[in-house]
Image (cartoon, rainbow, N blue to C red):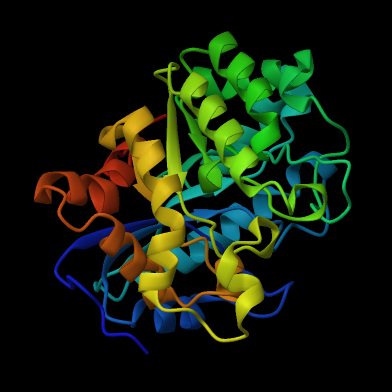
Length: 325
């Protein structure tokens, strides 16, 4: 196991999950990973279809996941020790309900008034089954009902986590322009796919992703989470080269163009790092992930690194705000 670099640098892990429906990754497993030596002070829990209610109206069953995350957060808070796990909670709500989604949002807020911060409704779609998108059809971000639901988020000051694939960035650009007052947080650097029909197009794909991210960066309401690089769908070099966890130096070399491109386009103030655990655990270790980010930013001013690793996540997810609603 690698020794943690720059262990005094504060971190807010801007994106992780907890679940028991795809194996077990709960508080003990997360704390074990965090115990790799990095100074993780707080985290943001993001929905993954876990712990839904098993009864009641179908549209409200997703609130069970917020209740589940809030219980874990309170369990952790009672110890009085860091990290503050699930200091922010991003739940799921079906935004295609339009204005009627307000009932679901109210239930999420009631379940966790001090921590609920926004919604992620995945729009990932690709015709190639290897990409395994979760949306039922393409173009969800352009649907009137979906945008009407997003306006309910906007009214409450909640954020929208956008999980999509790189080729859907045009849809996200139109969505962001249509809802300029909605805070949009792009997950996993917009997931430049590397499997199936994309497997042999790395350079071409990077240029297309770079161009589309440049267009998106003109929308001041959009920020980007840098991470998700351990997911096999990206098919980055170490994933096929060896069954062993790569070194942070190898990871940093591969992800640096993506990270630096986002920072150049969006500016340091609109980027933040995430672990995306446990999905990234398929090919990376928690310690290697954060060491790689630290190597990518080695030489940056201390103030910029503090923003990227901690302060931006706290600010964009409003983790210090209470009585928000």
